[in-house]
Image 1 (cartoon, rainbow, N blue to C red):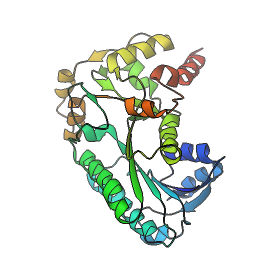
Image 2: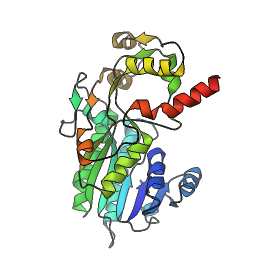
Image 3: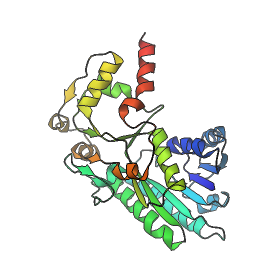
Length: 295
């Protein structure tokens, strides 16, 4: 299978590494550094902007597309340009070819669920995005699942929980604190890429929630990390205390008020084999490195 990863960044590079032995992979990035990072995985690299139809013409024909582009943490307008307009551009560009892809996997976020007051959500839970950016993500999911088939491409969505892994462990945030109460839903980068690979190779599911086995209370997670790192438990902060901060943006305020636990039951039923089933396995390397630096 020939696969193009559009926006071959944090997860995309790991996906390219995982696919390299069995498939032909093309990684698409905008920058010179990004192209070099793609080449380092062994994949073919193409320099192009996913929002530029003319630039995407330089990407060869493929059997499957993975749309994993990032808006760079900017606001809703930038997100719409990449996730909605860029995704639509990619679908129209590749779908218009004589040899068009059979499959598209779009990487979304569990932020589209909104607030469930700590309750469980899964693939059947209706979406209720609460910020402009998560509403954009929900719209992009619709483009992937409804517009792609109009162009002869089977569209699917991998809905990622919070990503962590190499260069994104953020240990200091939790062991130094203060830590605001709430739930963490997480997935290690390697498993996030693994779920996309699973969708390309092993299942025709249109939607999968990519999250590990154990959503965890932030205070409990921070205490566990502190104990494992050999430091004092960090200070804690209730939501009400955090919300008293007048400098909080409206988006940050809504994120604090959003609470849910994400279930991976469907992914487990289908047989996906997690490399890091919980944060305990996933953070082991980071904890070891932290303790080594302290000694």
